[in-house]
Length: 232
Image 1 (cartoon, rainbow, N blue to C red):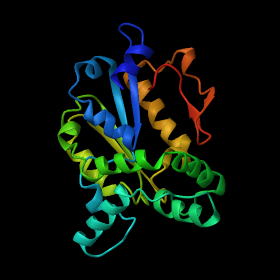
Image 2 (spheres, helix red, strand yellow):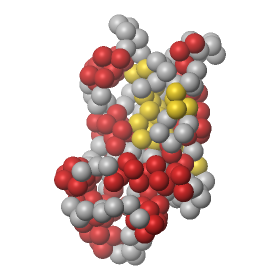
Image 3 (cartoon, one colour):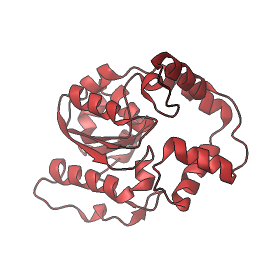
Image 4 (cartoon, rainbow, N blue to C red):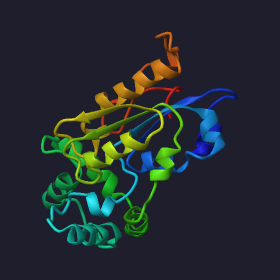
C-alpha cells in the first residue's frame, strides 16, 4: 500500500484512504510506517476488524463460543473448491457476505470476486485472518479515522466496528448501515463513497471546495462512484 501511495501521489500530496475488509486491515497493519503518516490525511475503515474474527463472526451462529471459533477457523482455512456458480452457491454466498436485501446483480458481482480467487490463495489468506491481531495497529493509527459497518455483517460484525471505535486515537464517527452485510461497497456504494467524500472535504479541502479531479466520473465494481486523485 505504501508503494502504491508513493507511485500515485505527487511530492507533498496526501490522500484519504478507504479500506474495505482486508483493505482496512492493511491500513491498520501499516499504521507504524512513516510513509503512511506522511501520505495519509484521513481514513475510512469499512466492514473490517482487528482481532478475534473466528470467535466473533456469525456465519455459523453456534451458541458455544468454542464451537463457533472452531467452525470459523475451519471455514477460513478451507481449501474446498467453490465449484461453478449456481443458484445454490449464490444463495450461500449471499447469506455469508451480504444482507437479505441484496439484489441478484449485487450477489453476482460478489460471486465473481469470490469465485475468481484461486483456492490456495483463499486458504492461505484465511489462515492469516484466523489469527490476525491488529488492535495495536488500530491504536497506532494516528490520523482522523471513521468506521463503517453493515448491521447484518456476519464476517466482521458490528462488535468489531465498535471495538475499533474504542481504540482508534483520532476516531471521528461510526456509521452503521441497517440491514447490510459485509459487502457494503457493493450493497450501498453511494453511502461508502459519501463517507469518503466527506473525509476528503474535511481533511484535504477544508474550505469546502474540491479540485475538478474528484468528480465521481468513474464507476466502482458495485456500480457506485469513485473519486479521483484525492482518495486511495
